[in-house]
Amino acid sequence: MKINNVGSNMTELVHTSGVVVLFSYSTPVAALLPSGQYVKTDRKYSVTTTKHVNKWVLGNVETKPQSYIDELAGA
Image (cartoon, rainbow, N blue to C red; front, side, top):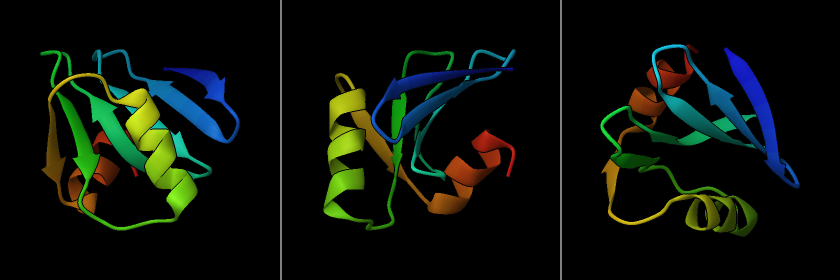
């Protein structure tokens, strides 16, 4: 695994499987799957976290339950 700081209070966790999970502050909120598909949480967070997700996600994004994002993050 690798951790990348991608912005103020934005961090990527890159798994060896190819999954990249976006954390806003300490919360996993979106992911890029090895297929190239972006997914984001269905949970509503702060305005800032929403901006983080919108800045990071490119193209088509699918909304998934927070538990799915947590699982991808290994939580």
